[in-house]
Length: 340
Image (cartoon, rainbow, N blue to C red; front, side):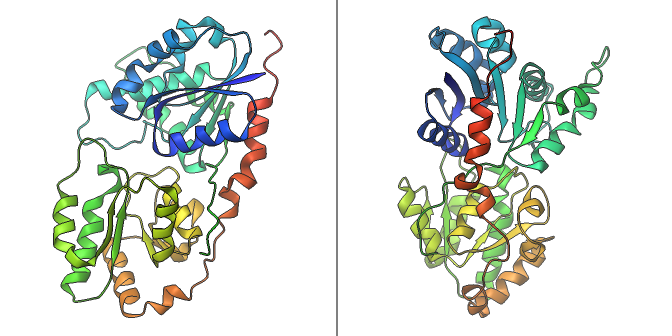
C-alpha cells in the first residue's frame, strides 16, 4: 500500500511535516511545489498535480495540506478521488487575517470548505484551529448573497479530529500576521530605557520584507546577535540554546512550532493570551497587552537569573514525534473504504 503525499506549499512547517512522514513511514510518495506565491498555489496547484502525478494502482491513501484544492484534484483525477483522502490543516483561511478584504479572498476559504466535504478525514494541528474553522463556516457562508448551502458545519465536523503537529526535538542540553511592529516597538522601548539585552531574529525571508525589519535592525545596533535565516538546523537550535527568552507577538497562529522548539531548548516563553497559545502554554507565560510584555521583559533584563534558573512548568513531550507517530501511522495505514 502506498501513501501519496501532496504538498502545494513545500516550505516551513508544511515541509517539516511531509519530510518527517516520508522519512518515518513506509512506502510514501511525495509530490510538491515550492513555497512561493501561496495564493497561486491555492488557485492552481490541483491542475498542476493532476497532470504531473503518474497513474498508479498502488496508491491507497492521499494525504494533503489544505493549501491544495482537493475538490478540483478529485474531479480532474477520478483515480485519486477514489482514495482515502486525508486533509491536514496547518492554518485555515476562515479566520486568516487579510490587510484588505476583497471579494476574491472568499475563494480561499470556500475552497477549504469544499475540500473538507470531499475529504474522508480532516485533521487539524490544534483545537483552536479546528474550532475557529468550524464555528466560522456559518458566518462565512453568509457572504454568499443568496441560495446559501446549509448544515455545512455539522457535516464537516463529523470528519474532524485534532492531531498536534509532530516536532522532532533536537538532542540538546537545553510576516504581517506575526506583528513584527509590536515586537520591535517593545525592544526599542527597552533600549530607550537603557536596559541591557541581546536579540536574535530568526526566520525565512520571502519576496516582500516589511520595512520594520531593516529599520529595527539598524536601531537595535549592537544588541543584535543573529539576524535572518539559518539554513542549518543545528545552527538554529544552537542559537535557541543560547537564548533566555522567546517572544511571540503573533496576531495569527494556529500552532507555533518555533515557540515549542525554543522552549525545548531552554527558553522562557512569552506569548499572547490568545489564539492557540492558551491551549499549549500555562497561564504564567501569557500576556494580554504590549505593556504587560514590556514590563515582563524589563524585569528579566534587570534580573536575568529569574529566567535562567526557571524550570518550564508546561509540557513539550505531547507535541513530539515520539508521542504522535502512532496517531499518524494509524491515520495513514487504515484500509480504504470497502468499495475500492
